[in-house]
Figure 1 (cartoon, protein in one colour):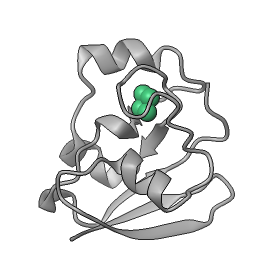
Figure 2 (tube, protein in one colour):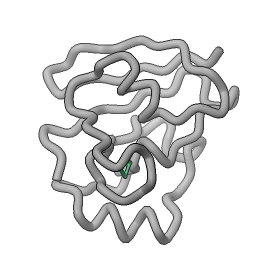
Figure 3 (cartoon, helix red, strand yellow):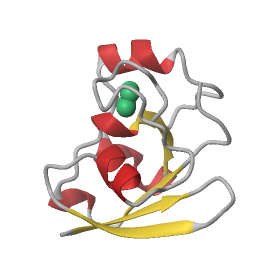
Figure 4 (cartoon, rainbow, N blue to C red):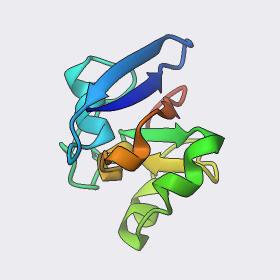
Length: 106
Ligand code: FES
């Protein structure tokens, strides 16, 4: 299992055990992390799973695909470390990953 920490906008940390191959969004939804709506169910078609990747992890997580970048245009307050959490696949290399939920989606 890979440890993930998803920090809600109010600062509450959700420390989760995530299965490799699952997405960060799936783990957030399964654990009822507030602020991850994931309206499209992970199809990269809604931008309501927007997160900020902790600065220490941006290189390991990598860059969004062009399709994800297009969808991020619909998110609020996009930053250089913005990603759609349904497009971040959990791997063992991401053990300890920290992401932050933005104030609001869409
Ligand atoms: Fe819709 Fe991620 S869940 S883009």
